[in-house]
Amino acid sequence: MAYRVTRRVGKYLYRYEVESYRDPVKKQPRQRVLHFLGRVDKEGRVVIPPTIRVDSISGSLPVGALALFYAVARELDMVSHIKEVLDVDHDSAVHVLCLVLNQIGPRRPLSDLPAWVARSPIPRWERLDVRRLDRESFERARHRLCHTTADGGLEDLGLKLQEAMTKVWRGDTREPAQFYYDITRQVHYGNDCPYAEPGYFPGGTNKNALGFGLVTSRHRQHPVLCRAIRGSRSDTLTVQDVVNHLKAQGFRNLTLILDRGMISRESVEFVVKSGFDLVGLVPETNQEAWDYVTRWPGMELERPQYLVERSSGAKIYARAWRAPLLGRKSMRVALVVDSMRAARERLERDGFISAAEKTTSPKRLRDLREDLGTLAIPASERRGFAVDTAGAAEEGRGDGRFLMFSTDGTLGAEQMFRIYRQKDEIEKAFQTIEGDLSLGPVRHRRRDRTDGYTTAIYLAYLLWSRAQERIQRKFPGLTVSKALSLVEDVHLVRVQAGKTTSEWTTRCSAEQAELLKLVGASRFL
Image 1 (tube, rainbow, N blue to C red):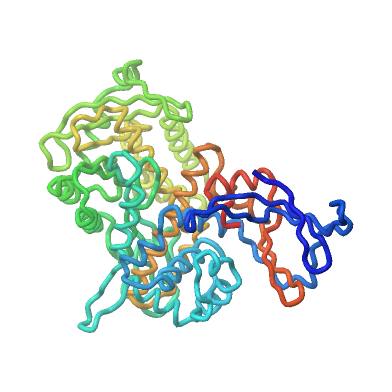
Image 2 (tube, rainbow, N blue to C red):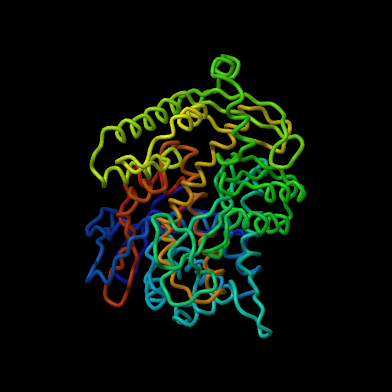
């Protein structure tokens, strides 16, 4: 309980608001000052109220976002796990955390990073010796994530760290092991890198590219694994590597959800023999799947018992049955019919055909020939091609239809549809990694640096997705990006008063204070 006392200091009297508490170490009552009320007279009246002396402001740094992600890192006990897995001291573990926080926020070059960390409150939060901060100390920390051994091998401790942190976030959840896997590609800016090769890149480029494969959880969208991939390597060939990594992490009986570009007989067989289940979408070019897609007319599919409602409110039809597919004698397959999409596809195709019949411009005809694809067959007429009307009719049979499958025979059509459609979440994860977390441009030349970089991306995205989880528990519609814009003007200000330097955090609004408290960041400001 707080109460006021008057104390004499020299020849003057001063008034304080204090409270009593019990010292748990010395096991005796103690007093602590809550507020200084000012200089008083003998009757206790304040004659000189307290004032704050400020000679100058020596610096200011935005800390709202930094405190938010640091609080999440503390909740996950990230520094302790870095210290244990990489076998480094406390300061080196904090260096790794700084690399991760820098990836999320300012993206300072390594040469500028020591100065930024020294100015930030991180040294105070982690009792970090700022005298040890230099470029070489961060180089050593990065080296511990992944490095070449004396015999020319590669020691990737970052993979072990990813495994450890995955166990941490999965430790407080009962969600099933249902994981999404996909790949994004980045242009490599440099002369040489073992991963950078000519390969597929959206939009086309004459530069070498490399891939980044990401595995995320279905329900929380937390990362499970992040790996670099050679630019020329086919997506289907990467599935086996990912399955082997997940098995090495100790996962059993998990379900893997893959994009249609990764589906092949070989990949399906390998996943099943590894003891995992697979949910996917069959490529449209698969003749076996096309026979199933066109098996039933619309009247036999568009019935109330097959209706499935999406989270957006839109409705589709889905019908499941057992059938041989992709080299397996029996799998659970589901034909999905989207009537709205079917109408759009039919209108688009009819529009191309109509335009091809009416257009005389050679350039426009070249574009239409490309748009029509296999429906444009060579002909000697003025257009240089003719429309395959029989092929158009056959293609129309598949409008708005696609075939899903599952190696888990217990899944129904609606379950398969919902599991697969939720794959959009990993696309959003890539948008965050490529945008807010600044995945590119990639300039690393050595393999160990690139592999170490993937772990930094994993840890950065884990902090991001964990913050998203915490925020949306109370504010379901609030994203991390929006939350960061709300706290961007929270600053740490250093003021000089004589020989004393003090730190103050700018006053937070009620909305900012509630948001920072929600993720546990208030105590660090």
